[in-house]
Length: 205
Ligand SMILES: *[C@@H]1O[C@H](CO)[C@@H](O)[C@H](O)[C@H]1NC(C)=O
Ligand SMILES: *[C@@H]1O[C@H](CO)[C@@H](O)[C@H](O)[C@H]1NC(C)=O
Image 1 (spheres, rainbow, N blue to C red):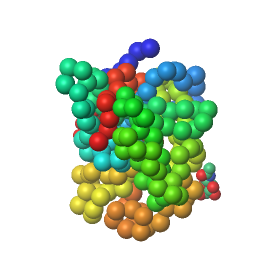
Image 2 (spheres, rainbow, N blue to C red):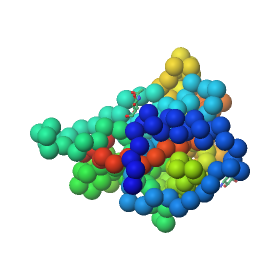
Image 3 (spheres, rainbow, N blue to C red):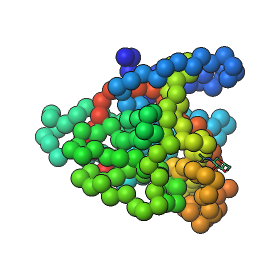
Image 4 (cartoon, rainbow, N blue to C red):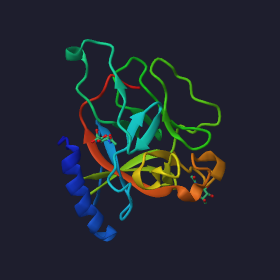
């Protein structure tokens, strides 16, 4: 398994984005690894922004927030946000070592979310399945059913500069009132693409 740095991933992605879809080779997804993802949406401010975990939600243009209760030397080495995807069950989890793990789910109003450490609480009306990864030309693509990933600015100002909160519009049911600016049209659709990430974090905070 070759683990990529985010910078290497960027150049790979640039090459793949430029290639016609028909030239992309579909292969088996590597097993036993977590993946990190960047947003693909050319000619937009979210292009190549990394999907980062903070405060139980996933963001573009926001720093990853982690916590480790151990002395620094005993903490896992991970710094980036990465996910385990179970293609069979369609479920996803955060790449953490905290006992109990951190489950990924789509909240009742579409927010891509993860459970708090030491808690299995998931709000009623959430969706925990539909996640899938595929590999094309060494790039891992994250999908959820209709590939309806949206980056929604947190306010009118953040439309061009971020941060953007990641939503998944599972059945096209996301409403204006569900997104931070109360206008779904402010959100940008994107494709999450990435590669293997080796190091876990203790927990995402
Ligand atoms: C998001 O995480 C990536 C990878 O760890 C990092 O390079 C990037 O700076 C982070 N984004 C922000 C806005 O901090
Ligand atoms: C895909 O989108 C269509 C139209 O928006 C919707 O009717 C359908 O339920 C969606 N499928 C899934 C699996 O989300």
